[in-house]
Amino acid sequence: MAEDLRFNIESDKTTIHIFDTTGKYKKNCNEDGWGTPNFRVTDISKAELEVFPPEADTPIIIDLYPSLPNDNGIGFEILAQDLGLDEITSGVWKFTYLTYHCPGEEGEQIISSTCYMLLDDVIECCIENRKTQADVSDVSSPASQKTVELETLLENARWAACKGDRDAAQKIAKYISLQCKCCL
Image 1 (cartoon, rainbow, N blue to C red):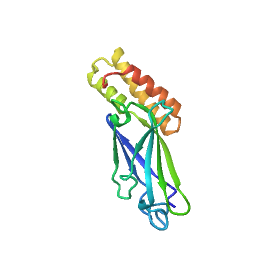
Image 2 (tube, rainbow, N blue to C red):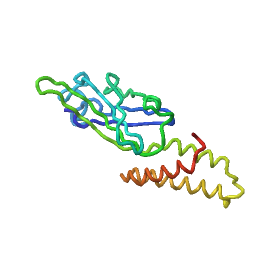
Image 3 (tube, rainbow, N blue to C red):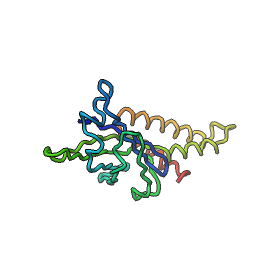
Image 4 (cartoon, rainbow, N blue to C red):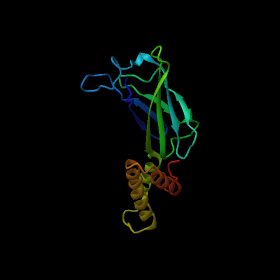
């Protein structure tokens, strides 16, 4: 039934790309993929992405249909403006990918998958800019020490997000954002 809906998210400062990675059905290899005996991509009547920016409680709904789902690996681009934003802000984002199936008499079925991601392009850009402006002859300067601190904190935020500690990752990302305004 392709009940193992899978997707990947990639982003930069201005865009988010979603890719359906459920793949094609293959016996003994990808038994949850699209196609017989599971749902086919053509069985889908609607697909959406619920996007929760950092610290948001209400999702922004993006209509993905008919571009997604697909079994060819082509993604769907979401611009920051599509989300009502000037840029893709750094922090922990929540994404829920939903597909709606109308297979007949069984009625509509919804299959969903959720992931949390630390999107950090803006704060990473700021830290990189600070590094290029740092006086390498004086690594003990306050500016150099602050850059090292922020770089270390970014690695900690990534680690926390990877380990599932979204609150810690968000707290660290927010702190870095407040300290670092150079790429805005």
